[in-house]
Each structure stands twice: as C-alpha cells, then as structure tokens.
Length: 181
View 1 (cartoon, rainbow, N blue to C red):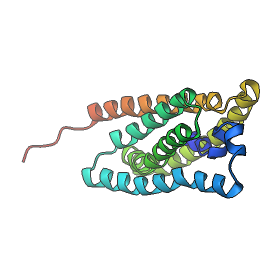
View 2: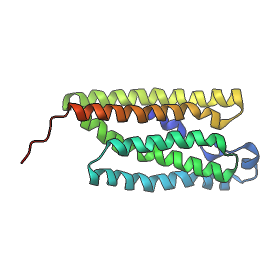
View 3: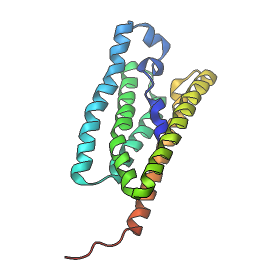
View 4: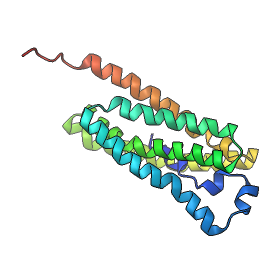
C-alpha cells in the first residue's frame, strides 16, 4: 500500500504540456502546493476522527477507495482545473489513510510480530515506491499520457481497499465476543 507514494506526482506532470507552458515556475509551484496543503489539514482531521470513533477499518478503506476513484477519473479530465480537483482528491486520500492504516496495522499484529510486520510493510512500500514511479514513467513514455501512467496506482489502491475490508471481516470473525457486564 505504501507504493502509493508515486501519487505525489506534481501537478505539472499530470497537466498537459500546453497548460504548464502557460504558467510561470512560481505559479506551477503554488499549484503544486494546493493538494498537499489541503491533504495536510484533512489528514489531521481524519486521524482525529478515527481516534475519536475508535474505528480504523473504514478510515483506512475509504481514503484508499478515494485514491483509486480519483486516479481513474484522471482519464476523463483534460483541463487544469479538473486535473487540480483530481489530484487534490488523490493526495487527500494518500495522506488521510496513513494514520488509520498504521493504527490498524499495530492493532492487528501481536506485540511480538509488530516490529517485523512494520518493517515488512516499510520494505514492501519502498519497493512499491520505486516500481510505481518507474511504471509511471514507462507508461507515460509509451502512451504520452500521465493519467494512463497513474492507472497501476489506481489498481493498487483499489486492491488495497478490497484487501483491508476483507482482512477486517476476518479479524471481526476471529475476535472473541465481548463479555456481557
């Protein structure tokens, strides 16, 4: 799931060349800041909401689904404004899922397995970050389209959504029933 790091592709990469050429470097930099500024605020709110409710499963799955949907919708937009909305949603999902995901991971792993599990998640994430970025470039070069290059990341996000929900269902079945007071 951490292979989603490649979604932090700047707006300049996702917009068409003609749109980027019409903006100064400063304007492009400010446009790049918008998704991350929004995502930073929503990440804190989403994490607090998850902590307040004590709910991790859907607070992890919903942002992953948002990532998948927004990156897939990137195929449908060609304007800079549409691209900005799509990237804002994708980056918000990328940031929002992190807190609940790590809380969920540590809840599901025993104390003895937590260190090894977290290390494994990070190792897979580092590999995914490299492979995802590499695939983005290869697909963009082959098709000339950045949105097409983001489709593998959308597919991984969708798979992550399904995996979290399915694992969560299994966890609920395995959990002992709460004793009545």
